Image 1 (tube, rainbow, N blue to C red):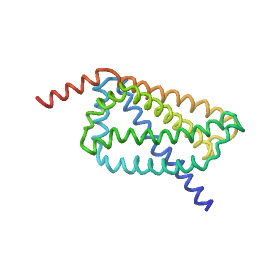
Image 2 (image 1 turned 180 degrees about the vertical axis):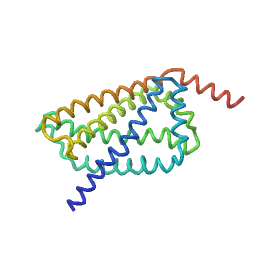
Image 3 (image 1 turned 30 degrees about the vertical axis):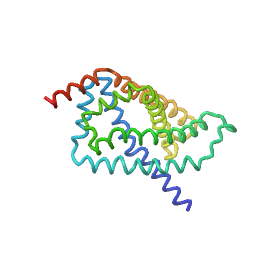
Image 4 (image 1 turned 135 degrees about the horizontal axis):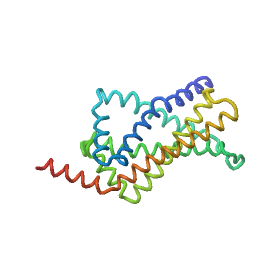
Length: 222
């Protein structure tokens, strides 16, 4: 039983890095195009991804299946965890607790984000070209903007701290000094990743995204 648990946790850890980290970084870079180049650059990035060959197969194998396993098993791990920050208040113990908490927040956030985007495409309510308008509506709604800000910060921390834990558990960073340096590095990554996602979210508030959507609608009607 313990052996099975060991290998399940290893798989959970590995899937969190490969391929989910790759998807996370790709999603970050795609969204950052909104901040870097505005609606046209963002739309081009979305179209590039959605024009990849055998995209549904790639998404299922590299994103949805790993995400469901990592998320569901992560909930089990969080439920089983003994969060004892009250007794042991040192930094890494708080990071351990936050990893579990942000994991739950991230799972809820991702599920809702997928519903507002991918599921709506599958239902035929929007097209891939409408993602800019969808994100504009989200970013200009105070409640949604707050929810997305919390979700982005939680996901960025879970990503960065999870990689720190991955390096430790797989024997890559051994010893207090290596782990301390790794901690500084990955917290720097957290700041960068969170900053890029938040910059994109703020950029979606621009009226340029609403105006572009209006132009596209008028063109389609004409």
